[in-house]
Amino acid sequence: MRRPEDIKGLGQATANLEPEAAWRWVHCASMGEYEQARPVIEALKAADPRLPILLTFFSPSLGEPLSKQRPDWCGSMDRVVALPPDRPRDVRQFLGALSDAQGRPRVAWCALVKYEVWPELLSQLSQVKVPVHLFAAHVVEGALPLKWWARTPRAAWKSLASIRVQDESSVERLGQIGLRAEVLGDPRFDRVLAIADSAQDLAVIRSWIAGRPCVVAGSTWPIEESALSDWWPGPEVALIVAPHEVNPQHLDAVSRSFAARVHRFSKLGPVAGEVLLIDGIGWLSRLYAVADIAVVGGGFGKGIHNVLEPAAHGVPIVVGPETHRFREAQALEFAGALQRVEAPHELGLALNAWLADATARRRAAAAARAYAESGRGAARRIATALESGGSTEKF
Image 1 (tube, rainbow, N blue to C red):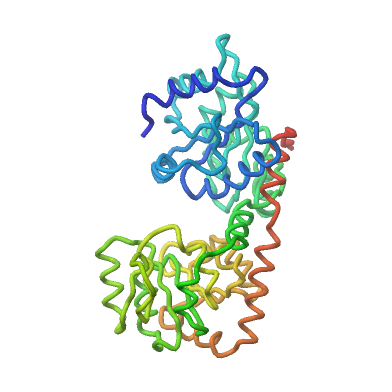
Image 2: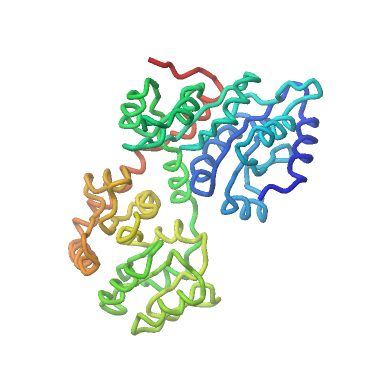
């Protein structure tokens, strides 16, 4: 929730800006959108560290972590603030905190991430002539602005100064409602590549693996965990399980499902168990560095989790069937880097096939990394476009 002091503090920060400075305002709904925005903000800061960044959010899933630890890019003049609901009075008050004593906005531009097109916010920013851009958009069939009855959302989209999308299919769908967009890519690629390319302090885990083939199962749900416990052949395969839910009850259930000694990752000292259970958050993207094969959860439910993280590490991937909404999964499957299985018992069969064929596994690993590399540079392109201005033409 927005705290009252956010508005007051933001108004004071605006007053303290250098005379010619103006906010570069990026809005994210929650953590997923922030992962796309973060590389863009870092690219802006790399180009000019003096640029004052205003990051706004709406969901506590992003606000709470950022309140506990300031982002690395966040300097003394930068601010992270909750955005109020999209109601006229609330938006007016918020924009007032971004204006000078004469009511002129101290905002160079506002950038929205993926789908965060708020009609009232866009209307009021248009009135004070602040350009609003959208980046990393991925417009799927049936998306809200494409619906014939969605007049208000469609009008908001048409008021955008520019629309930068992830792929050509989004360009085609937006063209159906008279909007022209530009493909600049998905900055999540830059984020996962930066993590994969950074030095990883995983010596204790590598010592435990001791040259064995290693499977890392990330963001798993009970159906994947059950399938893994049925399949696991024993200590000859190093298995690391990072559940999506890390509450004590679920972790205990995962531990009981394996007829083996399960070691909790949070315990200090050498890894002693036969299965390593990750009982905290924030580690998974780095742990793929030790994997020979990754299992990414969610595919037997509403949809798979992040397949870009293992791809950036050059790791072949096995997932459940629900991939139709995820272009990365479809592209990785086409490239031969990802296997999609229809039923839980097939998960073990897919793992066995890749474990038995090192040549095929290496080929899939190379294809995974090549796909991740194909998206590199989106953050810099988007940052450059935001600073250079420009508008999206309408048909």
